[in-house]
Length: 104
Image (cartoon, rainbow, N blue to C red; front, top):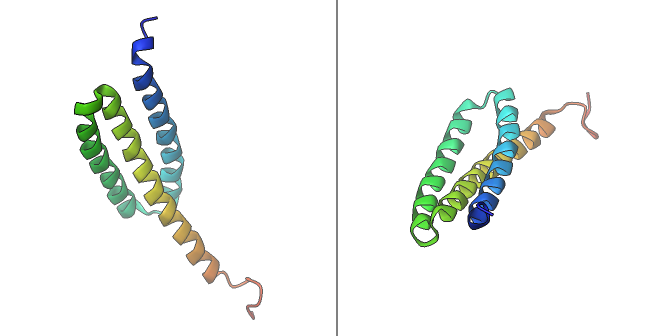
């Protein structure tokens, strides 16, 4: 009964944590590629989104808005890392000498 009033905050927090765990997997992939510089920049971008959007949503939506701002920051971080990893995978494909149609 006590948690019913905080249902929106808990839902937002659950979404944020799910995104956080997806981010951990992508972070590990970027670390495996030794891409620490872009990883830092992307985490900084996600943090700035969290700070800006979380603060902006805090006043009209309360704590729930801050939590959804945090989820947006994680999503930003995930999208930037996924973009980098996709580009890296495509670059590796073009460098593979045993690709079909490539003479050895």
